[in-house]
Length: 135
Image: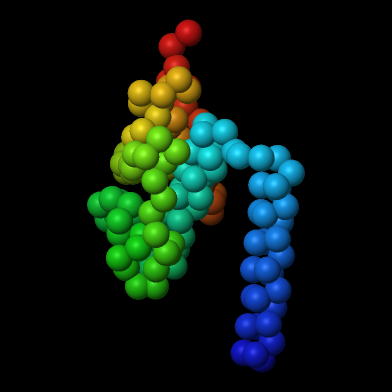
C-alpha cells in the first residue's frame, strides 16, 4: 500500500512538473502581478492548512515563517515576491476568522499593492483581491 502511494505521488509530481514546464515554455515568463497573486493564493491555502493540520487556531500564527518552522512543515520555503520583497500576513479576526496576505514589494510597483483577504465561510476560506490602486 505504501509503495503504491509513493508511486502515485511520484506520477502526480512528475505530471505537475511537466505541466508547469510546458506552460512556461509555451506562455513565456509569468507577469509579476500574476506571479504575486498566485503566490498569495498558495500562501493563503497554506495558512488555512496550518489551522487544519496542526489543529491550531490561525490567530496563533505570528508570521509566515511559522509555516516552515513547525512540524509537519506546511511549505518548504517562503517565496520572495517578484520585486524581491517579502510576503506579509496579518490576522484580523472576527466571526469569519479573516486574515490578509500581501506583497511587500508590490507597494512601489506599477501594479500597486497586491493584497488579498481570506475569510472563513463554512469549512473553507474564500479569497478576495482588495483593490488598492488609485485611478
